[in-house]
Length: 294
Image 1 (spheres, helix red, strand yellow):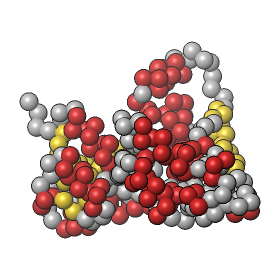
Image 2 (cartoon, helix red, strand yellow):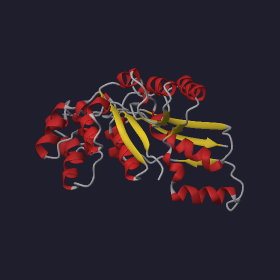
Image 3 (cartoon, helix red, strand yellow):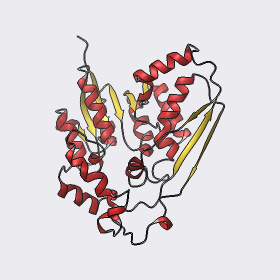
Image 4 (cartoon, helix red, strand yellow):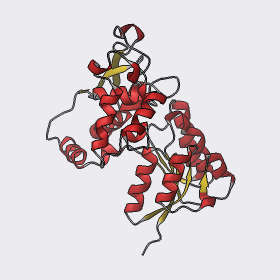
């Protein structure tokens, strides 16, 4: 029997925990280390995989100070924080599984690729849409000429209204200057999928959009800084209590409530909405549509 692949997880948020669980469930991999600054997330992943204390780190820099302790590093930090651990871990000999997007600039993407090539390690980006059954079937139809010549593609990413509010107004991707722009943050999956599906270099990409709904001047009369204090919360479609409290009745559904709080109780959710970012009034969002032509 082959020796299991060993994995160090850098970033123990939802993506890091999911990749760790999926890898371990195959029986072909073992999670042996974690680096994460948030104690609750770090301890949760460490407990789930029985990681010893000496392989639990509060910073990826501490991980790379010692000898290599795993075959693979899964990098699931925030978008703007991919490049430094990716380069350092590649140089130390870790193969890399990198959450999308690779980085927030072309130059940083090139830094990661250069580091992986120089170290002779494998580099994979988590563009999972390529591997779904429908993608494989559609790819076979396109390659086989069943739909004729592909001249252009018009593609829409239908981001749900609640997902828009959760991730791109209140969440980690609410500001371009601290994460990345909407097309990269949400739709690099789509662009990778389209490129893979068509199988030819892109000649021209057109993307259009703008700010509209989530602006300070669009706030309704009587709106407060927090949903729990807001006079119009009961009629607001973006009410945080309306979005998150019903999820308590779905114990098997982890996301998106897990991003708000680890407490699965009404008191815990309300406390998070009063004190955390997800309880704030929506004030800024960029909504983007695009047309891609080959």
